[in-house]
Length: 84
Image 1 (cartoon, rainbow, N blue to C red):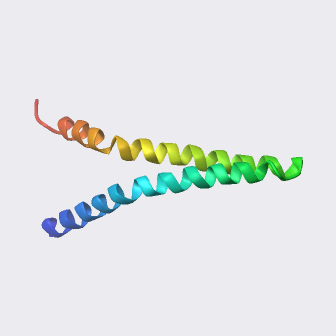
Image 2: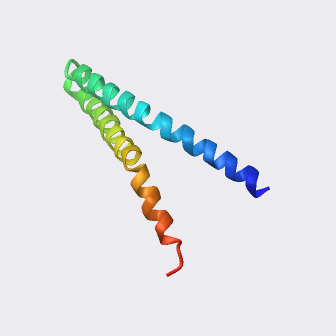
Image 3: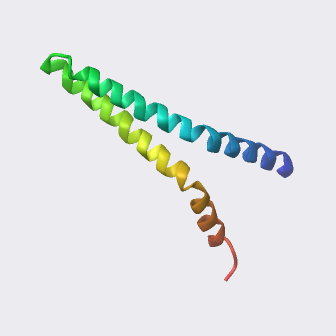
């Protein structure tokens, strides 16, 4: 049973490693487009759109940073489990 779970976990990890940069680029692009469109709105609506745009942009940066550092995080965390 452990072998099957290990294979499934490896497959999920490979899928997330592949799709994370794509999600980051989509979030950054949509954040920029939304922020630009927010500038055309009246003041009472602009704040809501700007908040959504900045949230998408920051989310894209975080996803990109985690995806970029995934190998380093994996190496560091595997070293923590070795006996001293």
